[in-house]
Image (tube, rainbow, N blue to C red; front, top):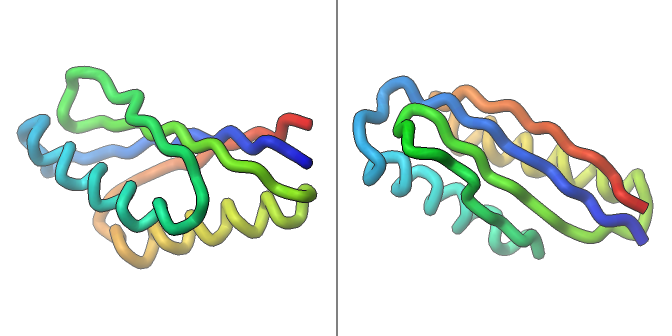
Length: 92
């Protein structure tokens, strides 16, 4: 059993308020909550940047990589106007 810790760093150049950023982050969290993932918002005070931390369990490395790919595809398809980067590590 592996623990997968990932961070998603988002660039939101068209957002001008924390309320706008929160709306986008809540939308992302709602779409990911069906994936059995724990999500935390690690964002600071700057509205144009956001960071989400994700944590989930995977039976093996292949399943972990597939789930990260699924998250990446979801973000690319649903939020195509947002620049993001996903970094993750497998903790065994």
